[in-house]
Length: 275
Image (cartoon, rainbow, N blue to C red; front, top):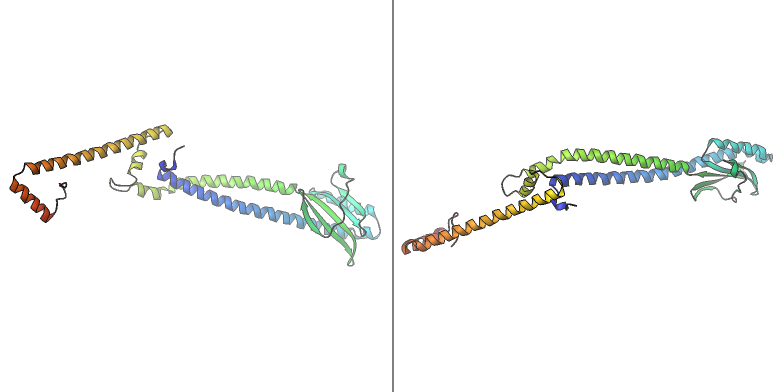
């Protein structure tokens, strides 16, 4: 793996924009996912409570006249709600009056004990208890149990939708950043003069590259060329200094004294190395 310091400035800008946008999309999707889960559970609880109130209102006559057959027929209407697994109507003393099961294999299920009004979620199911009232008097209780299969299906669909959004947005951001990053990288890479801090990157960018090995070899070649240029510049400076000192030693004493006095008075020339 190539260290990040060897990446071009164009690649760094593109990856920076891509990672930033990906994190933003993930955070947004996470917030929407949490909101969807909470709101879906609340909607299911409200739906169960409403259905329990409706079934309870229809069962007041059956409870008043002690007609379990009529209550069972009323409960059978829950077959239109496939997520409701079990239901039961209790008498005022807590005994079972009528019950309903989605499948015939569990028709003889044992209903739970009567509990106060409310909704609770346990072990992947949601249960609701509601009082059945007639003229403000409690004449019974209704119980319903629903599975969370609908919520799980909704969550799976939401996850796949989120992955699709992340993929499409990442592709759109990548292609957009690959083009728009030139607005930043081109002025920097086109820094005029040989002292540009990105001169080496421009040299590497202008050479053909094929893979990590070729790039590493070319970087080594460029480094050796730079070292050779520095060594030649140092040798040239040393040779000029030796020539200048030799010229001073071979000059007449009067000229040498005069030259040194002029140097002290006017300062060394910009093109002459110090003695």
